Structure formats: C-alpha cells, structure tokens
Length: 159
Image 1: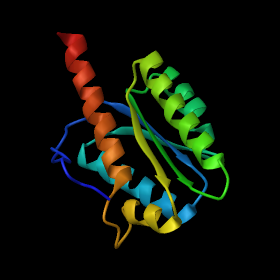
Image 2 (image 1 turned 135 degrees about the vertical axis):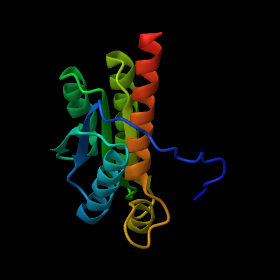
Image 3 (image 1 turned 60 degrees about the vertical axis):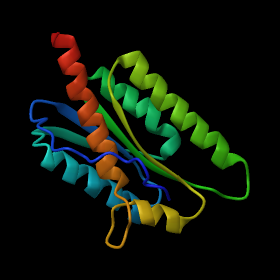
Image 4 (image 1 turned 90 degrees about the vertical axis):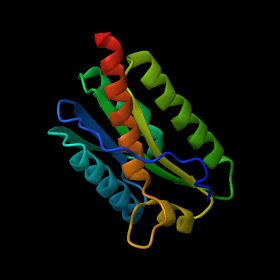
C-alpha cells in the first residue's frame, strides 16, 4: 500500500453543499467503516445537508449516483468493496463501476468521490476502511476529494 505523494487533506468549509453518499450493502464491516469515514469528513467540513442511501452492490453504484446527481446534489460519494475471487467477475465489476462513476461525474458535471475498494482479499479492505487498526480511511478521503472538487467547481462557475 503506497502513500507516497499523498497530499495533506486541508480543512474544508463545505457547509453550503448538498452531499449524497451511496454505499453498497456487501461486506458490512468494511462498509460500516467507509460510511463512518464519510460521515467524519462531512462533519469536519461542516456539511449541513447530506443523505446516505444504499445500493445492493458496487455494480449498482453508478446508476444510483447518477440519480442523486440529477437530484441537484453538489457532490456524490460512492462507497463499495469488490474483493477478488477465482473468476474474472472482479475485473468486470471493477471496470464497470469505475467507468460508470467516471461517466456520471463527467456527464452530470458533479464530483463523484471514488471510495470503491478493489482488493485482493478481505484484509486489504479492512486495512483501508478507516476502522480501528486500519492504515487508511478511504471513506474519509473519497468524501474529502468530492467536497474539495465541488468547492473548486463553485469557484470556477463564479469566475
């Protein structure tokens, strides 16, 4: 796990943003950590208007993110976990989720925080979930990135 080059996460004031978090139902313990990390980032940035919705799995994240973007949210955070198995299913799902979320962000011009863990095993997911003993907090990081991007877009649109 490389953290080389990771920027310092500066404090944000995103109190005026409407933010939605869409989280997969698979891998409950990991998802609980990712959601908690997202909630910590929202609180740290003083976000006053946020919603959390659930999707059946990671594959469904893009369509739910698209619906949320169309509802006028300033940023959407997508949280999920895909753990490699013994078939190519992992590759298909990871590609579909990544491409789908990218398309939603570009088509809707709404930042989508990418908090989808793509791991070789459950331990890697736990290490990134922001749980006690985790070395990373991807729920927090994805939310911070979405908020930061939304604030940047606000500045650009006002210029």
